[in-house]
Length: 258
Image 1: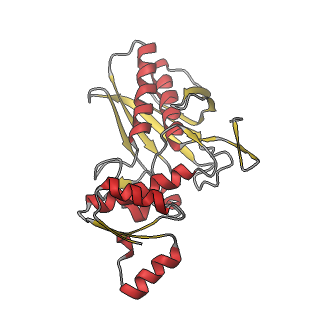
Image 2 (image 1 turned 90 degrees about the vertical axis):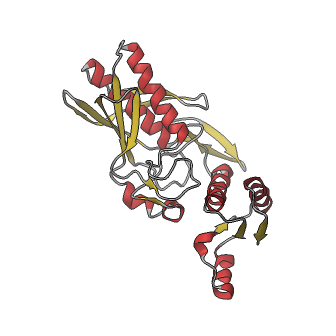
Image 3 (image 1 turned 120 degrees about the vertical axis):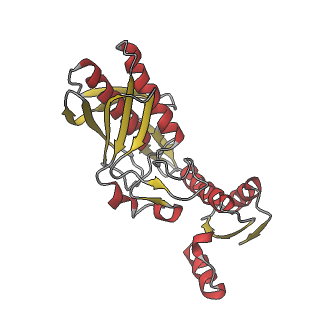
């Protein structure tokens, strides 16, 4: 995409999220399934209001199912998922409505306190809403009154996930399908703050009323060496100390060690 923002005097290209990729792939697959015609580009309106026109890749069609992919473009953001193919497979189903699940390379939630409950695929609620909206839009356009199943997969996801926070957060087997605006803003502070909040929520959901916080790896190493503290129960806050304190209060923690 060719949308930009200026940050610290630099012109940076915006990208789009794994959630946008999943929604666009699902929309294209649903369209091909219900029309029995090939579609090589797809339009998607993101929650931020920016329209995307994306190439549909690796199309696989049968009478019962269509599977296709959208390539992730993070713009000028240093994102480990850049260039990854996000697949959606759509087929008719007996289960009412549009059902959404994760397949190969999409992580599963194993700890409480995340966007999705334990056992669910790590497809966050905004991408799920985007996928359902786009698929239902196709159903309305084609006057289809039946049900559809959508499976999101990322063949490289399990390998990529090792470079993310997912193992620490208790998301196993792959990456998460993320995004609240559908658009990636390069070097976004909000992404870091969202990660801190997720880790705080997890500790609280596990029953802790106290939290140990360190700005970075030196602080975590000190906690481990000086106190033998379990680093899985601590949170790294970078330079966002004030914001982390505020979030800890909002989460209901009564004590905090920095």
